[in-house]
Image 1: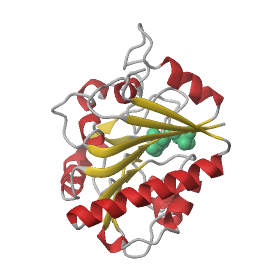
Image 2: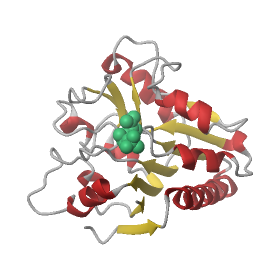
Image 3: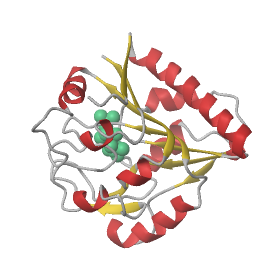
Image 4: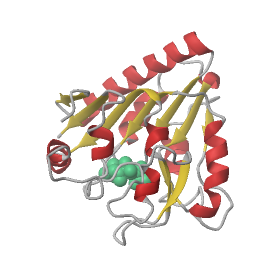
Length: 232
Ligand code: 6PG
């Protein structure tokens, strides 16, 4: 593991969610105090819901906060698998600005430039990025062996890129690129369960590659500290 990675274990998932919500709220407050506005990147999937529900309760001048997604499935915003739908229903507090990644283009590759522009207009660097991780070691939509993976982790990648996930993951995806995700004042990886803890422990082993476990590109870099929040 890189010296920049700090692992924090919680006694249960709800305790983790409340603690993370308080930390993120405090970071957003500081961002607003220092810069007049703050930005937050969140992930989809099933893990973040309790964190979203706790964060939504925080008293903040939400009209000064911009929220976007680390990645999105290329489905309409009312589709059950849409990350935007999850954020709108579980997190989005009144007044907060939401920047979605899905647009009217037919494919994520065709919609990526518009999504990049939208994200570029948010306050940068981000105040907080909260990533998840899949059981295959993907994070955001940086999937193992995706044909676009090398381009998405390149330092000069555009902010958002279309990704073709492996056949076990539904829907074409759009993802923020690695350099975009790392351009943040605080980076948290929020994971739960024993299987993900094992992946975390082995992500930086010699012989493991980013193509096998893309989370390695987040955990084993020394540009920015990473906090891993875990509960069984
Ligand atoms: C997505 C996510 C993705 C997620 C992991 C973990 O849209 O799928 O943003 O990167 O963080 O797949 O998902 P779970 O929390 O459901 O395990």
